[in-house]
Amino acid sequence: MQYDDLVKPEVECNDKNCPYHGTLKVHGSRFEGMVVSAKSKRTAVVQWINFERLKKYDVYREKKTRVLAHNPDCISAKVNDRVVIYETRPLSRWKKFVIVRKI
Image (cartoon, rainbow, N blue to C red):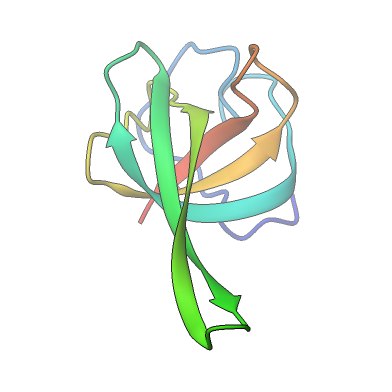
């Protein structure tokens, strides 16, 4: 694979939607963010912050982006972990990203 972030973890898992031990392929966008919630099974809410410039007022505004990401058993990211996520095929109605590693 051409992605530098995809380093196989030591722990094995039986998840078919794992990019390492299953059949899920990653493509497209790469984001780094913080896990805000990991209450659901194999799902985590990842948030990152962008700054948008308001030209009229000559200030910057903070914009938060939150997405649902698949959290494989071999990675099992917890709250306040910094993670790298990649875009993938839709796994459910809202999940279109997968966590590939913790930072």
